[in-house]
Image 1 (cartoon, rainbow, N blue to C red):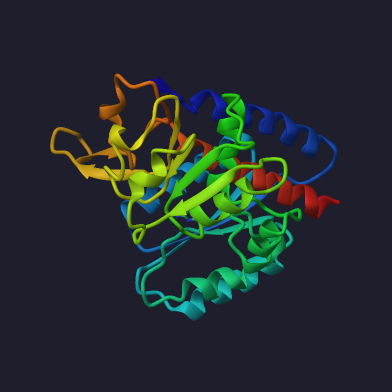
Image 2: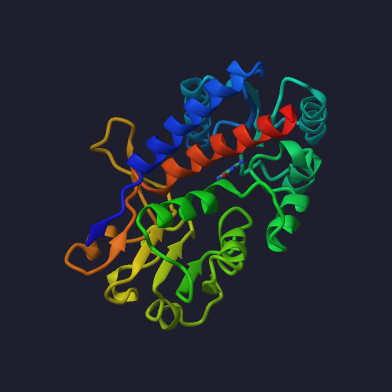
Length: 290
Ligand code: GUN
């Protein structure tokens, strides 16, 4: 097994961004800024939001954090987004997902002005992505592409199987990989796929983004294939101080003696997602400054 760690890649992206930010500020621009909105107290979401805040501080970005209780109203969130849309000192807006059930996620995302939608989830961004127009590329798919590039893993003519059809990962990943230039043959599998193995066993690259540990093990993967594990699952573990450990969507240990390259969890794609959010926020600041 070859471990495709992402620590170094993320660090080099961050280091480049830090230099670019210093130049940007020296040219007389205000520091890039990101507003992050968190609703409720989900432990994983709180961790992600903290990591985004740390990344902003390490780059000298401004960071505005808004926290709401679980039972906050949809109108309160919409009012905040309206305010952030108007504010000159806010370049990017990110609403941490998932939102509580009583809030219409789609309505909230729709409200973010496309120029400030650094997650790339708005209908305008999604549409532009699909037709290959310039847009914010959603952070996880963008991070996966950077990882493949870093490890010189080409996609042209390759069979890529994506497991998971989310708006955040699966769908934008498929749209990107089938574009001219990336030129992959893409198959998207999901919970209703009748024979997952039939697809994965002919894949050159498998991207697993289901949010379920153990979605695939080594028996789903042919020799020489690449596996990108997007999952970050908290597994209860009384031996750990915080009561859990992290696992991806793949049964990682089963790959130990196989000729397969695979991204680890932690230390994998999660690091890239945060770095790419910073990259999109910098892009938003550049667009504003033009
Ligand atoms: N929840 C899980 N992944 C993401 C992400 O990339 N962005 C936001 N806003 N919420 C998420």
